[in-house]
Amino acid sequence: GADAVKIQTYRPDTITLNSDLPDFQINEGLWEGRTLYELYEWAHTPWEWHQALFDHAKEVGITLFSSPFDSTAVDLLEELGAPAYKIASFEVIDLPLIEYVAKTGKPMILSTGMANQEEIAEAIEAARRGGCKELAVLRCVSGYPAPSEDYNLRTITDMIDRFQLVTGLSDHTLDNVTAVTSVALGVSLIEKHFTLDRTAGGPDDSFSLEPQDLKALCRDTKIAWRALGKVDYGRKSSEEGNVKFRRSLYFVKPLKAGEVITPDAIRSVRPGYGAPPKFLPDIVGKTVIADIDANTPVDMNLVAGK
Image (cartoon, rainbow, N blue to C red; front, side, top):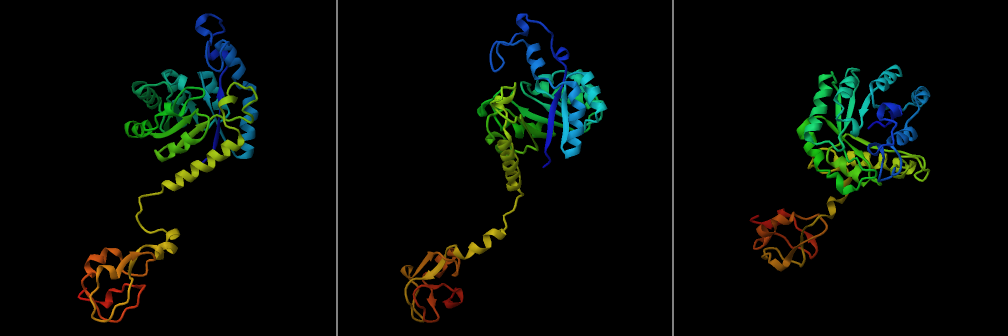
């Protein structure tokens, strides 16, 4: 699959209010002690960086898109030629924003952290109402970091059946196990936070993947995707050389022509040059038509009345 980078586009004053009243204070978690405005001032991507980011992405062949948080951010991203949009989990209930993004006609990804079935359905309806034709949803847990057991990945198969959309995973766990597992359940997209240094002190660094982890994620999810394959009971090329080591029937003591094959004269053993073991009940009690040496594979043509 293709790899892409997503950033976030907002100004602090478009996402919250510059207030230190209790409603706007963070009292727990990674960002405890800050106000919402202080957090977003610290975390946001300056708007003046966007042009350079999009130019560089184009130069190196990386697909770059963004999560907008208000209409002015959408307008900026449209000027920059953003190829797609993502609606963050905290904004999935902002139906006017979703409709505004949908009117661009670009593909949209909806992250569903904290949203229940009804809220997800409302967001999908808003996207469709705005004209979005290419829509995906992400299973997400909005914890930073989130424990793997909170993901309840079986929900992914229900989402695929229920919403009939391309479905992915927004993974905030600290390793790649949850993401790789989700591939087996049908996801087509995986989102992870990324940093050059998990200890650098940035707002998302502590729960983000470092370069070696991201490389492993790309490698392992693609292996998992290829391993899913298709329904196929046929023998594979990698198995052909081992067929001869399957079990088969062997005479384990010498027999003379016309002698009855007794249970102790024949066994199912490896390798596989003799008759299949399923014929054992049919052979016992029959006679051989030629002299047989011990440790000879059973040839059904040497058994009388087979």
